[in-house]
Image 1 (cartoon, rainbow, N blue to C red):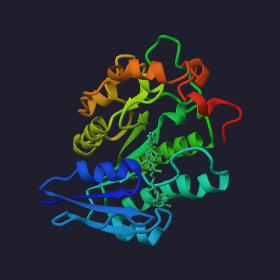
Image 2 (cartoon, helix red, strand yellow):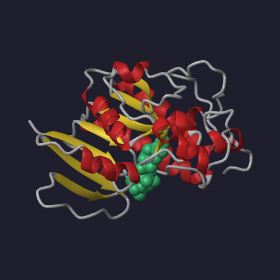
Image 3 (tube, rainbow, N blue to C red):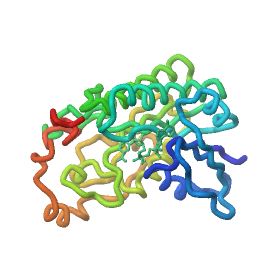
Length: 266
Ligand SMILES: NC(=O)c1ccc[n+]([C@@H]2O[C@H](COP(=O)([O-])OP(=O)(O)OC[C@H]3O[C@@H](n4cnc5c(N)ncnc54)[C@H](O)[C@@H]3O)[C@@H](O)[C@H]2O)c1
């Protein structure tokens, strides 16, 4: 049977990449974003939906017959105000989970962020565990931690399977010192989402989303438990990065969230 996957935020950086890399013969993608998307290619098994994830009716319609929702849509960095994070990220995630539950979707994969735990130290020499208690580094991080809480509630109360991916820094290549430990390459990002889609009965999981970086500080235990096997290594770019960028400590290097922990960061 054809697998139906709904991607919110499908016009974003990660969404566009997944639109391409998640293509499979027995799979159909519903690509939802608030902004216009690239037209469908010839033979592309997909549907474009222009809607907001904050719209309950649109989300309910989009979730009909769906096997997995990949919830990427929303404000993906700093620079917005509290009302915007509450509306788009917190309320939007609630609407997605609630629509999924009401439409009978069994699984949601939530694009969380390392910024949900960004004020935890990064330089203790101890592996940063899975399920680290939230310690957000910004209002953006708070919105991501709130999203994880909603995922937890919808699992415990309604039995929805939810995999929260605490994504590091998704880039085509690592571009700064911090990325040497938290880079997520496009190829590994696809492998991570494929694992979260395929793993049997995950329940509620919090999984680090990083590549096989030699300087990794995050646990990959839960990632391995869902079947994610990263391949790429930021170390391959280390020489270039060291030449290009400032020192790690100049970038908020004592904390997982890096520059987001700076008091001037909004
Ligand atoms: N890129 C990273 O390094 C990174 C790291 C950690 C977490 N994440 C998370 O992964 C997700 C995707 O990140 P990205 O880099 O592709 O971000 P992006 O900003 O490129 O994409 C986000 C998409 O969401 C859409 N969107 C915004 N408001 C919406 C709404 N109300 N309804 C539907 N769609 C809406 C935007 O139009 C955009 O296309 C985000 O949730 C982000 O927080 C990304």
